[in-house]
View 1 (cartoon, one colour):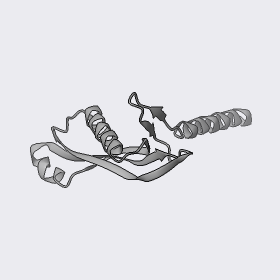
View 2 (view 1 turned 45 degrees about the horizontal axis):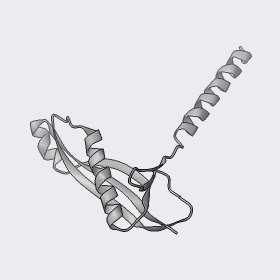
View 3 (view 1 turned 90 degrees about the vertical axis):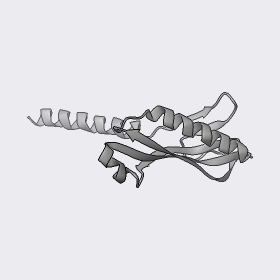
View 4 (view 1 turned 180 degrees about the vertical axis):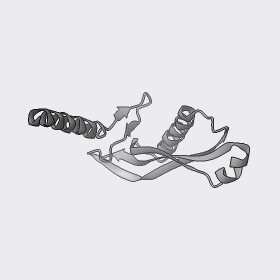
Length: 126
């Protein structure tokens, strides 16, 4: 019985460790147009220019909408804004959303209004 408990506890510890490590990944890529993007919060050899944020509001009848197209549109707007700031890239890129205050009014017609955001820190190579 003790051997079985130790084996189960060991397997649970390994599974917990793997799950913990799986959430610690970052993505660093160069886009085809040369812009550097990172979901990490530190990139060596760069100067930070400030936080850049873009947002959009989505009306979702019956709560149906394509989140991929919303995020893609925000991503494109973020890249344009970063380029216009004279930056070489953006780090600590994050997408998030929240219900708009208008959602509570639209519930009567089985719809939702959501505010989507993308933000990151514009960087310039030193």
